Image 1 (cartoon, rainbow, N blue to C red):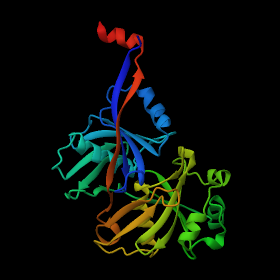
Image 2 (cartoon, rainbow, N blue to C red):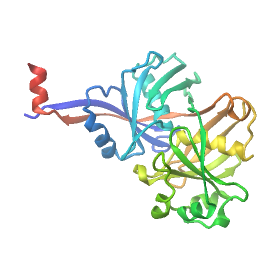
Image 3 (cartoon, one colour):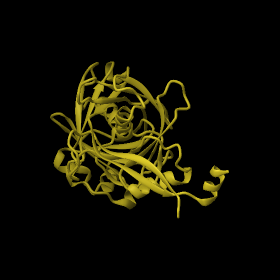
Length: 307
């Protein structure tokens, strides 16, 4: 009889209060027994934007170490997995439910998490340091999105801002043009940065803040329903170009995923003038499923553990 490794996991929907909306995330609260070579394979098997694996922290200032994978790539940092994994860590007792501030160790380093303390809390992450990188030709970016240059918001450049993952921000005139965007894969590949595949983030100003879509086919994510790692840099980009209030304590909301039937709401909070004291990104999380993954155990490993 073949031996099976049984690993519990949860699927949660992040940046929503409604199951089957927001951005789905698979979380393995105790991934210590999973062989290294299976992590990317499991993420590819789930084939959702990201899968998170929780390990004991290697740093005393962090509650756990979390590795995050898209179906094709391991990430330095990702937002909806940070928020969703923090939720699962509280639900499973990795951190106490009454602990309202802790840090998660990711490949980019410690990521601070804050819980607002309500019955249905917003879980906030503090975006890692944001840097501005390359500027791209507007016409090239429009082509990559199946749009015309005249569809882009006048006077606003197309630029990469990054908090660990390079995101190319393309501002268009209105939400209808956001919904009309579609990826030209060949044109998109020409936009890649030295740091790796570029996530193309198209958005328009909206009454609540911004209405957005994000495409990252080179990472195995054709379209992402909610991109928490891009929300902080979006705020920095919008503040840099006068598209949103940059005063200390100002807040706005990003709506993403609506076009693909997975409406997500990402809350952004600015600390300090133009985010000089940090930018927080937060959202709600709901549990969709709790299940067990069964993997065959290599016989040699089983024999070694029995001896």
